[in-house]
Amino acid sequence: MATGSNLINTSSQGQPTDNEDRPFSFAIGTQIFLNPSDDPTSALISFKADASLLAGSLASGASNLSIGLSTDAELNSLSGWGESNISTASANRFPVGFGRVNTAPEKIGVNIEGAQVATIGKPKTVGVIDISSNVMSIANHPFNTGDRVIVTSTGAVPGGLVSGIGYFVISTSANSIKLSITRLGAVGNSEIDIQSVGSGTITVASDEIFTLTRAGSSGTVTLKKADVTVGTFTNTNVNSPLRLFYWNREQSASSTVPILKEIKVTGAI
View 1: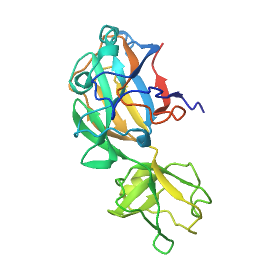
View 2: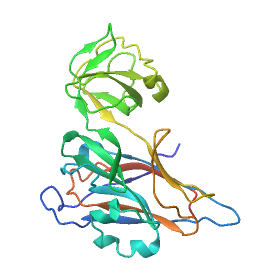
View 3: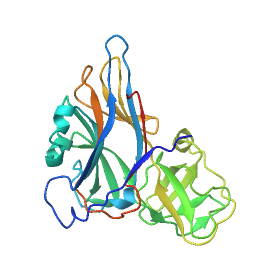
């Protein structure tokens, strides 16, 4: 199975040390998403964002990172886009924004048109694991029920889990979680049986899969988190060719780890 493409932010400038409102790193995709009237074709982009690599502190709904679809005419000025280009509704731009929330610094807001529609959590270290109740204690964890995460360890992961495999959170309190095999299982409190506590430093990190779609028949643009639609853009776009873009006004937190990863496209030429 194809793993998709990755985007690494290598900029030595940007927020939080430089607050200039422009992208310090950006890119435009070479593939074009068409939507012929005689054969409507949906444009789909799936991707993951690394919550650990965003450090700026922003108001809810504001973004420092974005991936999305736009017309060529709009992208001609991408190098000068400010945050308002990400947060303002347009029939020619469909950005999904990400920004670290100043009131909840362990969470990254997922934003559409200046409104937060979801969050992903920064990685957190597990404290105590109770195998009798399958509870992982994580102080002030940032995860919501249904969030997709991975579990890793410097030693061995807890028995019943596999390192690097996606699981879904059951948030049992502000300081504890359980895990489920599926999102629906998490919503229904169907927990995984933890058979041993593991060893080493155990970390839970977001592994959320997002899908941005322009529907071929209607031109409606939506964002899904896993299999749940979390946002619908105000405007539709049926006829314009669109390209994928990346925009980031933060200083790099890593010159090797992708800030956006496993980017896959369907419906492009």
